[in-house]
Length: 65
Image 1 (cartoon, one colour):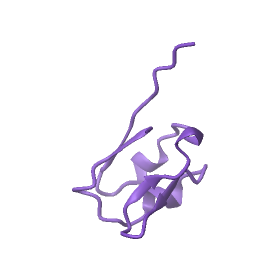
Image 2 (tube, rainbow, N blue to C red; image 1 turned 90 degrees about the horizontal axis):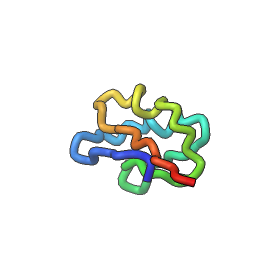
Image 3 (cartoon, helix red, strand yellow; image 1 turned 120 degrees about the vertical axis):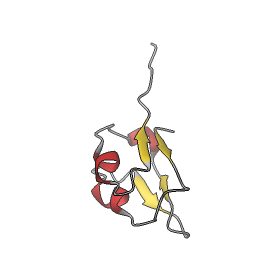
Image 4 (cartoon, rainbow, N blue to C red; image 1 turned 90 degrees about the vertical axis):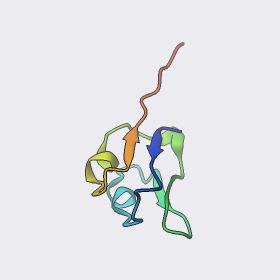
């Protein structure tokens, strides 16, 4: 998972899903965001920046090859 989403403060507004350029985020039936395609995340920060409640934190991967 590339994002840490605090569901206790999430209002379900959907702003994160709307601004995601890769359409990685979506809303479930309860209006809670989830990573539909976690491997396709660009780590651009749009979801974190546009979340009005500040509920999203990007977790950058630590790749070792």
